[in-house]
Image: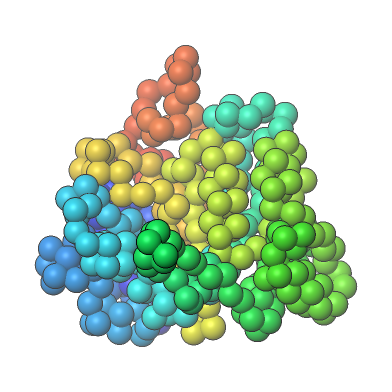
Amino acid sequence: MPRILLLPGDGIGPEVTAQARRVLEAAARGADLALDFEEDLIGGASIDAHGTPLTDAAVARAKACHAVLLGAVGGPKWDAMPVATRPEKGLLRIRKELGLFANLRPAVVFPALVAASTLRPEVVAGIDLLVVRELTGGIYFGEPRGQALVNGRREARNTMVYDEEEIARIARVAFEAARKRRRAVTHVHKANVLEVSQLWVQVVQEVAADYPDVSLQHQLVDSMAMLLLREPANYDVIVTGNLFGDILSDEAAMITGSLGMLPSASLGAGGVGLYEPVHGSAPDIAGKNQANPLAAILSVAMLLEHSLDAPEAAEAIREAVAGALADGHRTRDLILPGQDLAAIGCVEMGDRVLARLERS
């Protein structure tokens, strides 16, 4: 029986995770799939209970599961702590412990939310793209790094390092994803300046030879940042390194109109996937039944697809979300000024998605 570890975390994390679990259980029943759930602490909740943002026991539980569903971490309560012990370190540790090198962030504009984007409706209509970001290498982890006093002046440095195996494995993730979509990969780089990017271009091109059915184009990161705003519907799968992926995935996210609609999956060679909404812990609305659970719900759709090999159940969830939105149901973050819509709460939105799911 597949085992799912819940790490609700902080702020609105427990609220959105609870709704996501309800939807996951219903979709699993429809697919005749039995699941076993466990729960543990991460982030500030773990600091308060155990003095650390992630315990060894929680890590062991995660490694023994098929998938991990995470809510959110962090909040002002822990902001004054040293960086090395803050809640976010729990998230970084679990990614490292599970060997999660590939971050998949889809950006989809649901028809009912076309007007929610800051871009013109004709620009965002039909957007369905996937950013595949390398998650464990690059400038965030390269050595040497740090600050020092050099010739009487403060100096800081970070090092961008990638080897060909790191590049090839993330490229393969992107090409495999594209085969299930529209068969087009865009590799984003800065090869006109960076030797690291020159190696990326070479290796991605070599991997592409194994996927003759998938088209490949290379795009400089600065022009890509512009093109994502000008013609986002033209892109299918975007693959890039850690730094560029961090920036571009957030840009793609905001094109859709709300962080409350964006799921993510982090995958690796170990077989355990980590699924989480892109949004933060939103402590200002925590406990008020105001959070938007749709990103967490869409994250469990990715869980079904990637960790449980249940693509039909995943698609049923996505259709249920689209249906609930088409029916006019909105949490407050999805209501635009001037719209004559009444906001519903986190639990109520979960109810609406469940009703749609059960109807299908």
